[in-house]
Length: 273
Image 1 (cartoon, rainbow, N blue to C red):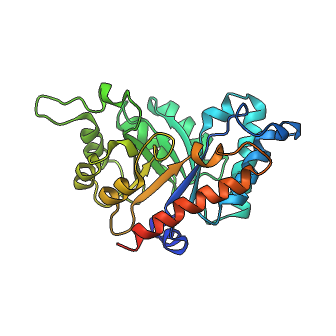
Image 2: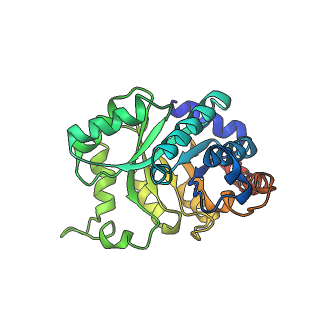
């Protein structure tokens, strides 16, 4: 999917919502455990309920890998279902890969050769040769970790060198030598607030994938105020707030309503562009 195609979908739906499919078999409604594939059954219901209000889905691979072969099958079925039934959706493999070049080459093949993913999250801290193998696939995106929403982000990402340049700023600047805003996005946590202003000065035209809104306490209004650019430039992820607000047989209806609320708020911010 090209940057323009993604932006067109955002305009059409008046939404920059990404639904995180962090599907925990211990949290899904109990009645689904009777299904042959409970994880896929849950995902399918969530996808059908929310597809009108979002432009992207982000399966977190750890939740599927933790279930072994059954989890991998559920993941493949989920990605195929989105691709076949909702082809306009942007599909992100939240894998946070990052290793030496030959290993990254294998990770890239695993994500892009065998599944319909449009993008993959990558940790950039081993440098250029650990990222470049993901950038050779036409129409595919690499989403680099820049400034994340977890408490521990302060341990390394905010540390400064002797010139006062912080690590996340170095990541943003250096990585632009590897790819452009048609290939690279960045993860920036919603809890980082006004840091979006600083980030936009360095990467004014790139898309940012923003976790941390909702259950993690990030403010959508603040993210939009400081993070939006002329082509929106944001994919704001919501996982738990949409997936697990209800655990009864009405879970999909409740998820749909939660997604609708987020989309309606996003539409107001898009009108100000």
